[in-house]
Structure formats: structure tokens, C-alpha cells
Length: 224
Image 1 (cartoon, helix red, strand yellow):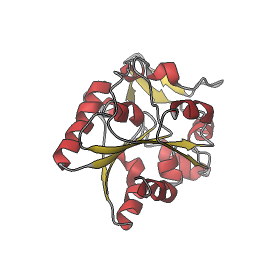
Image 2: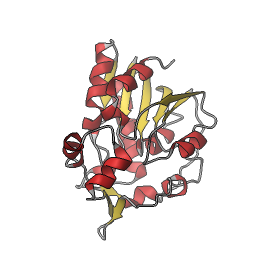
Image 3: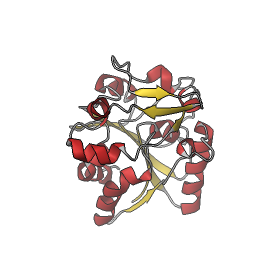
Image 4: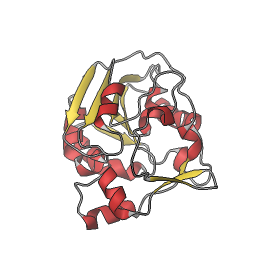
């Protein structure tokens, strides 16, 4: 199978590297979207720009793909639900809005806010290292997470307020619930998984492509 892997906010295509390598080791083709426009400081594009970017990547491949979105990447994957080359969509601890819903409508409420807005129209992960690690990847020790945290980037705030178009899907959907996620709470993931053809549960925190790369690759390889 051919997979197209879409990263979430703040962390670019490198976050899929190990999972992609594990898929290739199993004989699959894994195509990683390197950087969405919403995380590119040259443009800081909106959801539509991200969708166009991924659509172009799929069109360039010219063959059927399994489209996988992590976290914010689900906002992009959902908008490609009618793409004729997408044979299956996978939402990995990802936002899966209904038509008209925004990311702000469905994000989990946090007692300690870990997303920081700036006046330039961007959003950032908090500088509070301990809080960020608790929310995103507490499976990593402090040194491992420090390396990940140092690579975070800005993300366009406009993507949080743009409503989903409610594109009608033309292929099966799998939702992967990360059961120890403190960024998108599992109870909220379960709600977004409603109506999916398959629901899989993974004992992992939010940054599962990094903390549980092999397990993620194994469950993706089982998608049918």
C-alpha cells in the first residue's frame, strides 16, 4: 500500500520519520508531507492552503493512497474525503469535525492552557517544558522531550477558526484513539470517532508517531 502521512500543528514531517521507515520495512510506500503551509513562516497558510498542498501531493503520486492525519492533520484529511485517489482515511488522535465545526469547537478544554497566541496571528506551544511534556509526550524522558520540544514551530491561528466544509466521504475511515492523550482527551476522540468504519485504541500519548512509531506503523499496515 501507499501511505501519505500528514503531520499536526507545530511539528513537521520529521515527526513521521520513524513510523514511515517502519512502514517501508514492511514493504509499503510511505510519503511524508514535509511541511504544511500553516506551519511555513514564509506564508502561514490557512486550512484551504494545507488541503491544496496535500491534494497536490496525492495527485502527483497518481495512484490510490491511504491518507493519514495526526492531530491538526485530521482537519486536512477530512477535507479530502471525496478525493478519488484516497482509498482509506486514518485519523490518528486527530481532529475530525463535522461540517460547519471549527477546531476550536471540538478541541479539549484544558485547566492549564498550553497553546499560546501571539499578536502576529500565530499559535505556539508553551515554553513551560514540564507542561508541554505532560500534554504531548510524557512517555519521553526529559532529555528526549527537550529535543522534540526544541524543534516546535509556529502555526497559523486562522486554522483554528475555519469551519469544516462537510465533504461527503467516498471511502472507509479508521479512527485511532490514543488512550493516554492529554492534548485531545480520549473522551473527545471517542466522540470524533463516531461513524468511523473502524475504531482502534492505542496505549499512547498524543505524539504517538514519535513515542510509538512501530506500533503506529503496525496498525496502519493492517488498514484495509
